[in-house]
Amino acid sequence: MAKNPEKRKELTSVERRVARIASHLLPSISPLSPAPPIVRSVASAEDSYRRVHGEVSAKEAAWREVCDDESGKGFVDIIYEKALGEGIAKITINRPERRNAFRPLTVKELMRAFNDARDDSTIGVVILTGKGTKAFCSGGDQALRSSDGYADFDSFGRLNVLDLQVQIRRLPKPVIAMVAGYAVGGGHILHMVCDLTIAADNAVFGQTGPKVGSFDAGYGSSIMSRLVGPKKAREMWFLSRFYTAYEAEKMGLINVVVPLEILEQETLKWCREILRNSPTAIRVLKSALNAVDDGHAGLQELGGNATLIFYGTEEANEGKTAYMERRRPDFSKFPRKP
Ligand SMILES: CC(C)(COP(=O)(O)OP(=O)(O)OC[C@H]1O[C@@H](n2cnc3c(N)ncnc32)[C@H](O)[C@@H]1OP(=O)(O)O)[C@@H](O)C(=O)NCCC(=O)NCCSC(=O)c1cc(O)c2ccccc2c1O
Image 1 (tube, rainbow, N blue to C red):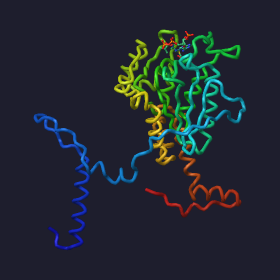
Image 2: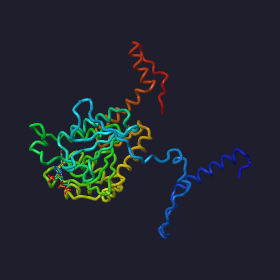
Image 3: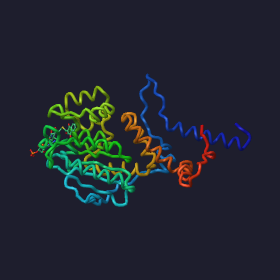
Image 4: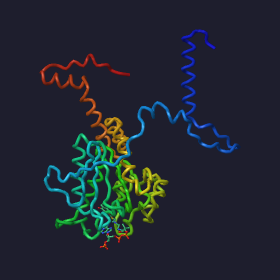
C-alpha cells in the first residue's frame, strides 16, 4: 500500500475506475460451465453517462400541419406536419385507399416537403410514414403505369421516385421510416433508403417487382444487399416473398419492432434522442456512412460537410478577409497539426 497520501489517493481513484469498467463487462464464459444469468449491475444502470443524458420524453407530439410550401401549390397526396417546439417533421403518404401507392404527384409533393424540412433549420429529424395502419407504402400506382413510367397528369411517364430516393439519401438530417402494415415494392425501397426503420408488429416487408414486371436495379438492389447481405437480397428479389416485422428485424432490414399501439410514441423517442445529440456530428456521420457506397456523389456530400465546418474557422476566414482587403493572406499563425 502506498504511504504517500497523494499516491494512495491516486491508487484508490484508479481502483475505483477499474471496478467501474469491470462492472460493464460480462464475465467470461467457459464452454464447460453453464452460461451465467446476465444481470445488469446497479453500477452500470446508474453510471454517469445515464445520469447526465437520462431518458427522453415519450409524450405525444403536438403536430401542426404545414399546408403549403413556397410553391403555393398545397398538398393533396401527402400530409406534412411539424411538432410544435420540437425539431421533428412528419411526412405522411395519404392515399390509404390505394395502400399508399405513390403516383408522380405524390412523389413531387414528398420532394417539396423533404426540401422544406431540409431548409428549415429548426428541424433536425424527419419521419416518413403512411396514412393508416394497413400500409406504409405499396410502391408505384400500377393503375397509372405506362410504357415509359408512371403517368398521372402528364402525357408522359416518369420514374421520379428515383429522385426522391437520392434526396432522402443526401438529406443532411436523419430520416426515419415509421412503418405500419405493408412496405412493399417501391414502398419497401423507400424504407430502405431511410436512415432508420421503426416497424409496428403488423408490418410486412418485401419486393414484388418480379411478380408485376418491374425491378429496381439501383438503390433498391445495392442498399438491400448492404443491409441483409447478398444471399438474402437475392432471395428477397428472386422469390419476391413477404416477411414479417420480426423476420425483417432478424435480417437487419429494420432497426426495431414495437407494438402497433406505441409505434409513433417509440419513433418520437428515437427522434428526441437524436435531437439531443450534436447536429454536426449526426450530419457528418450520415454522409460518412453513405460515402463509400455512393461513390463520387457520396464523397462530394462528405467533402461538402468538411468545407462547411472549415468555413467556420479563423483560418478559412483569414483567406476570405485577405481577399476582400486586397492583401496577401497570412496563414503563418495556423498550426500544421500532426
Ligand atoms: C400491398 C398489398 C399486398 C395489400 O394487399 P391487401 O389485400 O391488403 O389490399 P388490396 O390488394 O385489396 O389493395 C387495396 C386497394 O389498393 C390498391 N392498391 C394496392 N397497392 C397498389 C399499387 N401499388 N398500385 C395501385 N393500386 C394499389 C388495390 O388495387 C386495391 O384497390 P381496390 O380498388 O381493389 O380496392 C397489395 O395491394 C399489393 O400487392 N399491392 C401491389 C404491390 C406492388 O406490386 N407494387 C408495385 C411494385 S413496382 C414499384 O413499386 C416501382 C415503382 C417505381 O416508381 C419504380 C421506379 C424505378 C424502378 C422500379 C420501380 C418500381 O419497381
